[in-house]
Length: 401
Image 1: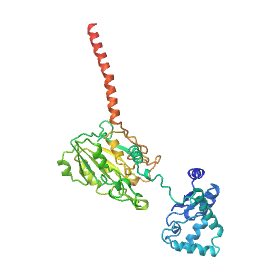
Image 2 (image 1 turned 90 degrees about the vertical axis):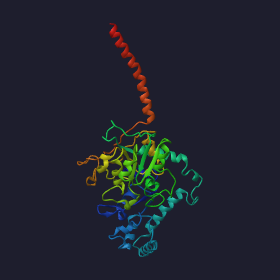
Image 3 (image 1 turned 30 degrees about the horizontal axis):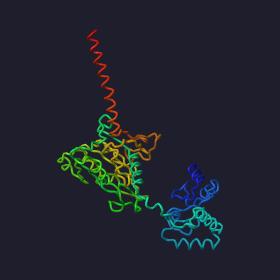
Image 4 (image 1 turned 45 degrees about the vertical axis):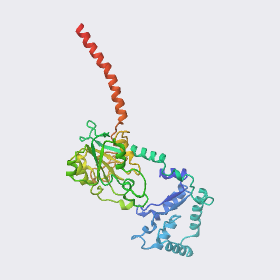
């Protein structure tokens, strides 16, 4: 419990109960942990809130004995109940339980007191409305610059070169070429870049609901003005072969999701991602950028990919990705979790006897920025010239001798 103890010490004033169970006991009905341990041992003085319809799940099936669920959760020590729809049923059941002395009035007083204490401490009675003095700062350029920096520092380079090592790197990409292809369903879609819990609960698709820079837009801004950028969401192989592209950037991944809507038994990328990789990467040098909230199945396609980037959910600032693709900054990000080979390996963590990942925890190739590469190359040249002179002088002296 160190994280909870530390949070309480630092003043966290609300705790939400999870849907999970511990030793077969639903957490929403666990008096031992909520009242005895959290409020007693850890001396938590704030209030405890249920999750969305969490008390309904005390019974199986959920809501099959709602009066019992209200009783069990309140007696367990939950102070505020999240009832999004049938709130009148909850109110009536709780009033009847108090009137019949099933739920002691002391529980109601304690819960109300905890809630009021938090509100008084926050000053909500003196200043009940939000402070709008900083509203113009939201989405400011300073904020976007910081978000862009966060993107370029968190994206992870998983492969750089067909052979998978640094002897034949593809990245950094040249900005000045005749023509490049940008493909994939995630290349021009802010909603896909942002993922779930953005504007709407399950996120959205498209570029209408928020402002920002898509990866396609970022690529167009990054390359030389003479470079032609062709975008095709789902090109076929003949199109790719016939256009003589210098290279292609394929942006694919998952569709937005939040909570259980994102549960997946196979962790596959969204269609037509696999076919786009196949059609493009078999015909031209390709860089695949994955937009995902987690590791997904990639091993079947990795041999055909020249460079692979895990960009996670970069949000509104697509230029954070092109910053590292084109070498304005170097790659430095590392995997925050193990990347599996197949879902059959899961769960898999560092130290497991069957630990055989595609990319291990903490993996991430690093690159230098173009500026650093040029500086290093120039420095090497300056050093090399005196060395050549020394060799020539030595040769001349050897002939004289």
